[in-house]
Image (tube, rainbow, N blue to C red; front, side):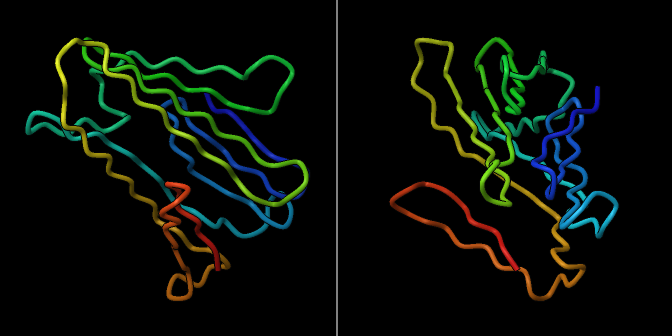
Amino acid sequence: MVSIIGNGKLLAKIYDSGSIKHIFFPHIGYETHIFNSSFAIFCNNQIKWHWDHSWDINQNYLNDTNILKTTYENDDFLMTSKAYVSMSHNLIVKQLFILNKTDVEKDVKLFFYENLRIGEIPNENTVKYVKGKNCLIKYN
């Protein structure tokens, strides 16, 4: 399944694995600002990418919203990704929640990768980590 999130100016195409594959702005068909994105968790000396076939992946829109929810589940973890485009601003919000399904405490690290081409100028893209909010802001 390929899903779409957008607000009329900003459109993102998301594959069934939850990867954002294309972003168009300021209108559909304009420059592709992203080429791919991936995330993974690292636990017990193993890395599990979100597209790994060991996950049971399900995807649906939340009722009466433009919020796309993708869940990833295996014996140890339930991960939930929520992605949407703000109706009032031209930005994509992607939230990730990780739940340990076992009674054993785990040391988990999150890895995130994106190949951005904002404005088709890769050398002028910027990423900022906001420590108090635990979020990344990416912009040109």
